[in-house]
Image (cartoon, rainbow over all chains, first blue to last red; front, side, top):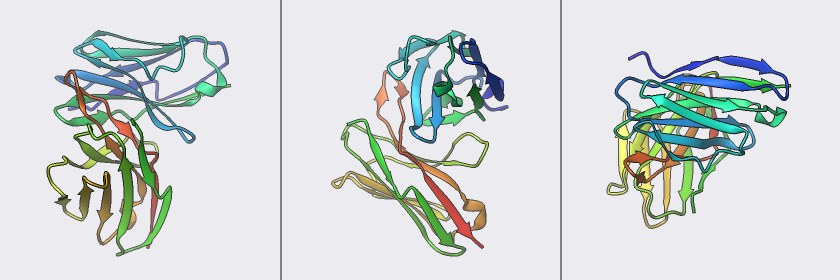
Length: 111
Length: 114
């Protein structure tokens, strides 16, 4: 397996711009998770999908955040408009049985 | 009730020593307790996990001790090595509609001095 693939790995953008983070889960995994990691708040679950259907988006901080999973092999997390406090590492993860496998993260800096 | 509290925040251990990281939870519905290891610039990776029907699980130098009545669990790293230097996260979850929603502790930055 190639692992969970995320892009971009690093993004620097100006406040107010739209940011789109992309994720390709491991083939055959039927659950996908988006996490955000910051020094202050640690690892926070933003949203997760089961069989491409959003199950729980209670962790999405605001309406500026949205996530989609149009098919089993692709998901996006969009922030529009972005703000400096959105600066964080965003992880996508997929699940097989009890194990959640994380990607290497997208490092977002909003200036 | 969804919180998992982890301590200490940081830990320094000499090579060959025992590293111990502790976690406590409130939600008695949690039924899966994994530990994740994260190296700088990488995503967390599953290290070892336990279910509440056993009190201990050992894999190599890594052991989870689980105390259901106290709602606590801990990670022990025996013969700690410099390569073990990383951030460790405990987590807990219960199955919801077939998907597991992991709640993470705040993490422990472990440094093993050579």
